[in-house]
Length: 483
Image (tube, rainbow, N blue to C red; front, side, top):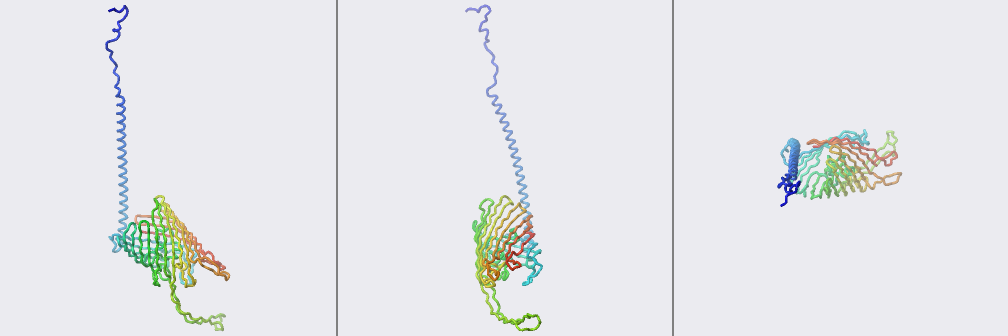
């Protein structure tokens, strides 16, 4: 084997037998560390979220508990108030299904037609600018599954102080859903016709019902029997009554003839969408009115001192022949009507209600121009009336309303002008604007209502004796408390 030359190194001597390798980091150590760090962060975030969730749930529980406690206190307060009122009623405490309610309406009225004079026919004062107790009602109601009863009295000073029965009902019913399927009622109850007759005096914004409703149904209540009820959205009522309402001027609550009035209404009441309610129906009435007969009279002789000399002069005696008696007579009357109401609630205590009603009748007026075809008119009187109203709720404490109502008590009215018979009109139109301030406590509701009525009335005459607008605008300020 040859040896390396001088100055050369053996190649095998230049490379050590083993070269110690540097220690390289493990390939999986860095990703594992990052994963562990992320896992720790996620665990921390989960713990924080869990802590927030627990805190949020705790606050919700506290809020719910506080609300339930407040509702319980309010319920307890209301129950205590009702129980106090019930226990204060003699013999009524502890009766299940018994409720006692009522209201008082005190008015100040100012009317253009008012005069400081007396009616020459009746002796009644013609002054209408006054304070009056319009209505004071006390109502007791007992509701059981198959039986119900209502006892209501009214006090007022409209025509002097008076106390009179109002609703007096005894009812047997067959239970159904929200209303009985059928209920048979006997006593004094509202005439089942239209919408305003049924409307409660404490729910109505306007001081009084529209003119044509008051003319056709004075007093709203009459004696008789009624069957009423409903199924789902359908409502019905059919009644047989005396035909002499409480507010009628000749025979209130009495019946001078054996014929009875038949009245009925068929309608619907439905929530057609969220916050939208529809109430509509058709009504009809038929019956017999009563014409009071006349007693026979004897012939009479009257002296008229025409020259005012205090002595008899020829031609001053007036002879009036006697008349035979006239028997009382019945006459036919009827009425048909339709009504509709739509309520739209935008949010709590804010909504709009629009409603309207119309009626066409024959000899049915019993207040404004009482119909009597055997009386001075000597013919049938055809009546026509309608109204349109809108009420706006502005929060829980303010209501605004406007109503226009029209009534013509005699569609065939005529007048004598320059010795010629011409057609005329006795219609009356009323534009009513009302605002109410409302306050409530746990057991009482109060309203302060101001209303101004602009009346266009063709019952007046000008200085030439021609038909003219009778100035009779009305302002009413009403204080009301109900419980």
